[in-house]
Length: 171
Ligand code: CTP
Ligand code: MG
Image (cartoon, rainbow, N blue to C red):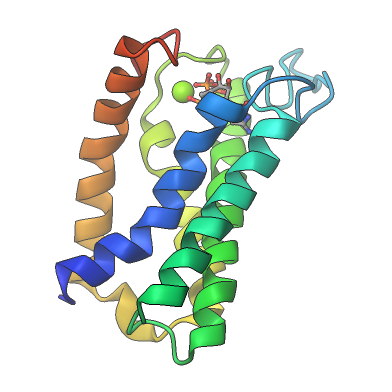
């Protein structure tokens, strides 16, 4: 497994992208109100255009600041690291929306807890950044670290956001 600091700095843009819509989201839904044949919304009101863009921008900016001050070993060159920040931020927001898509198809209401909520965003982020990184990033120890940390942190931070009055539900 790589240095813990490297792994955490790699994860930071993903976590920022995932968290920022709670604060900056709102307004028109990403699916523009569309429903599918199952009479359920495509994504639902919780996935907003502003939240999606805010997540991508904030995650990319976080990755950019990290790239300026710290060279992550997973990227073959520094330019890839900047682009990587954008790819993981985009992947995070797409994975988050895919989670909602699956929830709506499974008739799970917006804001209801669901296992995929805690994990799909990071899986999609890891897939999107794959072409930019050294394959060693996907060694089993690293993946285990990413998944276990995320499964612990995601519910925990949601609970804190709820206590802080940022989120209506504690998950
Ligand atoms: N959010 C947003 N735009 C996004 C993603 C999230 O505005 N693209 C905001 C919404 O205010 C949302 C909050 O962040 O309520 C929490 O996001 P999340 O937990 O992912 O949404 P849920 O309310 O759980 O909805 P869903 O059931 O669709 O996952
Ligand atoms: Mg949720």
